[in-house]
Image 1 (cartoon, protein in one colour):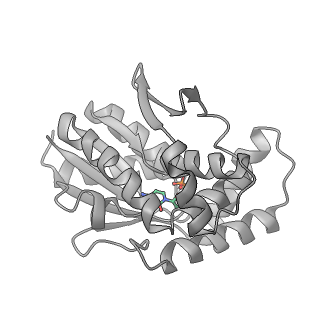
Image 2: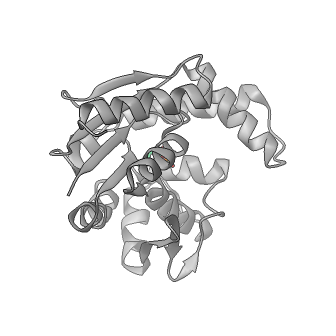
Length: 223
Ligand code: DC
């Protein structure tokens, strides 16, 4: 099985670009952030503190998270309910970042993430795929861009969905999440030593996709 790990901070375009790359290669695309988001959503819905390891740990036995692929598109199920849309809100983003710093949550999701790479060729995106989940991935990419560029993309997406947001808040949330994700004790966001750094600052989506597809083809020696 071939695996491509794509890590990087929020809003670098990982999911959009990884999806297209996976399609080009005929691999399945696994968005691991969706798993952390599903747990964040569950904890929020229960009215618990997403930063409290004690509270979050205590509800893990009640949680079943699954990824299902419907015509190649990933759907995330939380206790048998498709929550693929519900997990894409600002509060859930922050909740996901909070619960992801809790060791038992990472442990809980570890085997599930690895299982995909055992049965399929994958493009998997997240924060610790190249460093922890798939340390033997055939190719590791660290995808990044300036905080302003990343916040602008997030802002445009949210506006397009009709959400009422202010750019300064989106930038602030993103910086907070960058800080959380790269300063936690367990599996912090950082490039794997053997990763290829791809910076998409100033690129259009098309340019970023082309850059990444070319990098993947060259590195994996595909046609
Ligand atoms: O990729 P995303 O924005 O959907 O991820 C949401 C949060 O989940 C992110 O802020 C940190 C956490 N996460 C993680 O810790 N490890 C991963 N492999 C993927 C996501």
